[in-house]
Amino acid sequence: MGGPDAHLIVDDTGLLKKGDRPVGVAHQYCGQVGKNANCQVVVSLTLARDEVPVPVALRLFLPETWANDRKRCQRELDARARQSFLDLGPLPRSWRPQNPQSG
Image (tube, rainbow, N blue to C red; front, side, top):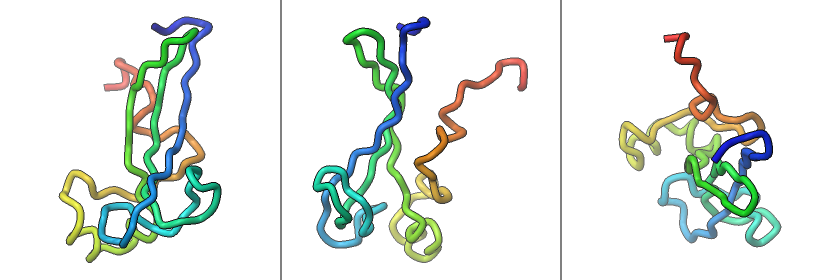
C-alpha cells in the first residue's frame, strides 16, 4: 500500500450539530457550510496511492473550550476520551510512526 508514490492525507470534516451536549460540539469553523457553525469536527488520516484510499485513523477534535472545562469533560467524557486541546496544524504525536528501537 505504501511506496514512493503514496500520500498521507490529514483532513478535517465538520458535522453540524444542535445543542452543546454532544462531546466536542462548539461554535467553530465547519467546512460543510463554509463558515462558523455549531458542529463537531472529526480529523482523519488516510494513506492514498493511485485510486486506493486506506483510512488509517479517525479522531474527534476536542476544542479548547471543551479541553479547558474540567467539570464539563468529567460529566460528558469517559476517562479514555479526556485529552488536551488538539491542534490541527502538525500531525498529532500519537499518529506519528514509532521508532521500534526507541522503546
